[in-house]
Amino acid sequence: MATETVPFTREGFAKLKKELEQLKTVERPTVISEIAEARAHGDLKENAEYHAAKDKQGFIEARILRLDDETSRGVVVEYNGAAPEKVSFGAYVTITAEESGVSKTYRIVGELEADLENGKISTTSPIARALMGKTVDDLVEVRAPKGVVEYVITEIKY
Image (cartoon, rainbow, N blue to C red; front, side):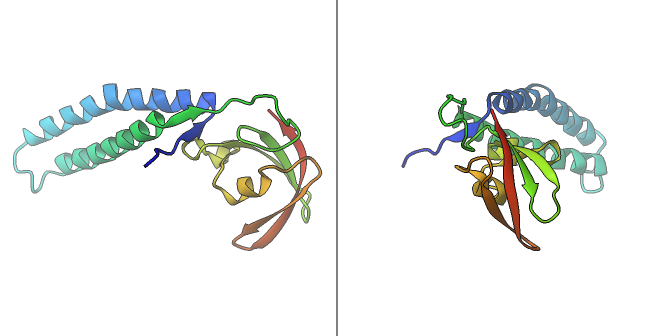
């Protein structure tokens, strides 16, 4: 069975590797100390500090496992200069809603890098899937919870 690669931008990969290092070298030892300290307080059944620390440890360990897995399969995808007029991974795409005329710019990134508040959308999102392979002035239809929304691509940058 082939292992599926996970695409990253250079910046996104570096950010996640840094987060992984922080979790392993700072967060994990800190929560282990918190658990040991809470244990010293006695009865674990009624020890809220202990339970909170164990919950935090579970979150940290799960995040470490996911980041380890994803970054080990990670591939930094660089723009190679081919077809700059088409939307592909890593592109900054400005779209304008046909109905409202509102424009938004998104960067198409890997799933772990997605951050809608900062304009980064995952390749698996409905908008990104609709944009992939399209060119400036193309009309794209995106299925949204409130129905189909039409956008025009006004700019593509790398």
